Image 1 (cartoon, rainbow, N blue to C red):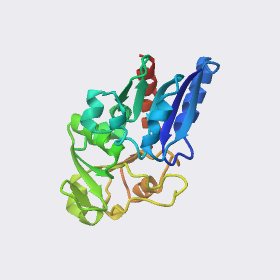
Image 2: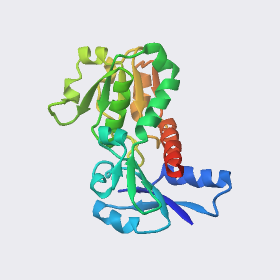
Image 3: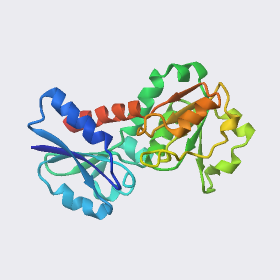
Amino acid sequence: MNIYGLIGYPLGHSFSKGYFTEKFSNMGISDANVYEKFEIENINDLPALLQNPDLKGLNVTIPHKQNVFPFLDAVDEAALKIGAVNTIKIMPDGSTKGFNTDYWGFRWTLEKWSDFQEIKPKKALILGKGGAAKAIIQALQDLGLETQYVSRRKEEDTITYDELTETVMQEHLFIVNTTPLGMFPKVDTFPEIPYQLLTDKHLLYDIVYNPLETVFLKKGLEHGAKGVHFGLEMLHGQAEKAWEIWQS
């Protein structure tokens, strides 16, 4: 039996398990392939999991996208540049290689989004500084956008939510939420941006996928944003890229 899975903590509801279980069923390969959730709080428990000879690949989620690096034998150049891994391939000899498919999934959705192609934003605000944020910033920069981190803590490369003035909001027409705010079960939480400063030129993107429409996106539409994008399609794109990597 080929085993694939997801590591992270806490896991709770898992998109990946449902997605790949359905995929294996549709492909008629459920008898030989299974996808499991591996709730690992301490990344030091990863080597024991990797000893399983049937394990072929892993997805990596919060909080391990960055602290998984020391446990890998090799890392793909793109993932190295981003500084985060969300997919691990276990080679036939047992060695491991890390990849980042968040980049691929996010960029793919932007290239298909008509509102994004129409507005052609030049600058973007990235809410949060986790592993997914790094992949998204790399994708946006490769598409020619200037990016600005926004976080609750002031840092050298970061502005705070209090610094989102009218001028800053007018300059940054694309806003991406990469924080877990709004994710099930805390569905009533949301990033504290000045929603009243949104215009019909603004686009909001949330990488949270459960629920499909978060408070962040709802408030964006209520305050006149041009368009919003759900996180589920990005997940589909990155999942398919992970499968491609595991099978290559």
